[in-house]
Amino acid sequence: MENNFQKPINYQDEKSFIKKIFKLFFTKYIFFPPKKKKILIFDNNGLNMLLSFFKRDEVGVYYRRYEQINLFILFLALFDFKIKTNLKRKYQYNYIKYVKPKLIITYTDNLDNFYKIKKHFKNIKTISIQNGLRNISIMQKEKEFKKTLNKKTDLQVDYLFTFNESYKNYFSKYIDGTILLLGSMRNNFVKVKKKEIYEKSEQKKSLLFISQFNYFKYKEFDKKNYYNINSKWYSYKDFKKAEFKLIPKLVEYCNKKKILLKVLGKTSSREEYEFFKNLIKDDKVNWKYYPKSSQLHGEANNTTYKLIDEADAVVFIDSALGYESLSRDTPTASFSIRGEFIEKLPCFNFGFPAKLADNGPFWTNFLSEEKTHEILDFVLNASNSDWDSVKKKYADKITFFSKQNLELKKILQLNI
Image (cartoon, rainbow, N blue to C red; front, side):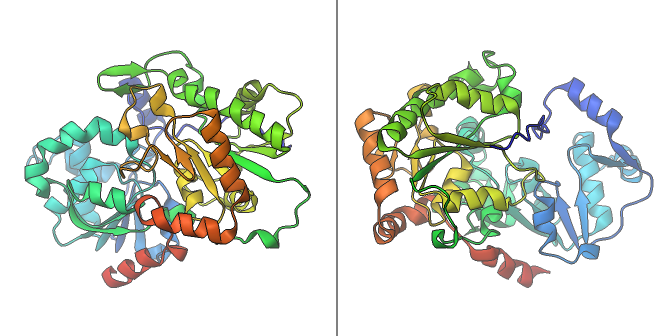
């Protein structure tokens, strides 16, 4: 096992005023006006992936997290009295107006203000790409969005690419534009590897569990200040109760069946390794932990997908990477059981916002020993044809794979 543990970088959006002031103090200030660009990438999330679609000299980046502030644009925004909004929105408007892009594209799909750009710049094409699951945020924003349901044109985009059919149906209720299926752009970049190309060192089968560990939330494990759902606050510990229940059952199963248990880390921190070591407890179980390889935030990680492709089966609770695994060839099981501990809300059910049964051939929303063994037996022993037929039955609703992001490339060719 590699021990390249390190303190992870915090990519969470800052919410407190103090943190924003701190960011402003250390930001990079640009004195010269930005250059005119044909394409403007809105937010640097997934920047390297987006840059791969374009000629570098045609692309500019709008940094919205205070990484850079252009003082020339800030001056224009300060004295712009035509727009009745806050300074941050004025800065954004004046930046776009000055750069004059033909296309604005973002990999941060959950920004309401991105969908308001079209209202001010009707001749600029806008493209948004879903980068993660929106389960909790859908529950949090549902009431807010319903207020704008009769004013759908407030939120506009030319093209919105979603993970699957159910997200497409959801977003179409609130956002005016052409909504297309893409799956995960990050996942699409990595070619699916057939298992036979790997030389396996172990004779026994392997089961890969996808971690959703969060280093920063773990530091305040018991504090009820991270999730506000239905006006009730939950702690990170509340969310980890699903792992507390599932991991021992996986250990028991793997011991009984003599299966190698692998844990694919979400971070490269020692704290995550210790978290799973304490959950697994049993010194006799044969298990390996793989810390996350160093990579830029949001970029495709070949090592991660290689581990998924070479596993005999994958297990996850409700991570985006788990749904990406479903779109690949490896049999994948989901134990979407967070709702057992948090008000039994539908946003924690497998496949949400699709409405599926609580139990299926490779998933369950309520954990029992019998169902655990049934699902694991299936994903670890299913033939290629059996798995393909089951996957195809549910694929359109819950997952999608666009080889090398072909659907996105087609739209870009038409609009630049």
